Image (cartoon, rainbow, N blue to C red; front, side, top):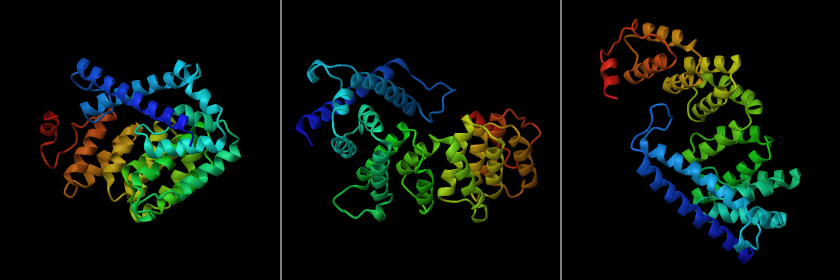
Length: 317
């Protein structure tokens, strides 16, 4: 790799880290609690998300504005002048060595290259990367770092609006009993970026696995379908989530997803389940259902509490 490109990437990473640190301090001084209407689980996650969002805005501006230190060119202009091989070399270097991963302007630049060329490259990298530690062939390479190359390629494909690997990605993902959380999250981000293409594949996976209890990667697939459905509601998605609730071994996933999806028809289904299973329902599942019913606008006053402490538990939170 050219030394000037390597130095440019290092400088980008250092500046991004400084901006993030500044934003974390800024929000930490301004805010003392998490608003009730945000999805972040904790105050710390809320602050980190705000800081990350503003850092991304600041670095995007940095990447696309002319800079005297770069000969009055922007980072994007410099990347656009590179050959395709130089761009992908820079992408892989960034994925493996930068804390912030590849600059968005670099991904944007690669996404403008001939589609066949980019598809072939991304398909090869994603296919060759280990998706679990067991697949790692080089003991000198950290699994977490190698998979960053696949994440960078998913980002490029998303920018290209290229869903051509959706089925292949889902097929491979379903072949594992379990993957690391950051792998699952990056897969989900790509899948959820193309709702119209992904929906039938996700529904097909769920419906074909109901007899096995929808465990392992199927739980993630239910979550992916929910995320798509929140913005693109269809009757097919609701009915599939309803089936997931009926057949899932760990029904808590389905309860949370139906609540997030936001169809109030789930209220009567939850109430009927509680009434039919008063003597056998597990405490955690009961609590989750009661919370889901409230979230969907349902009335819980007519539900018999087999544990006698749901309202008390609510008061503690």
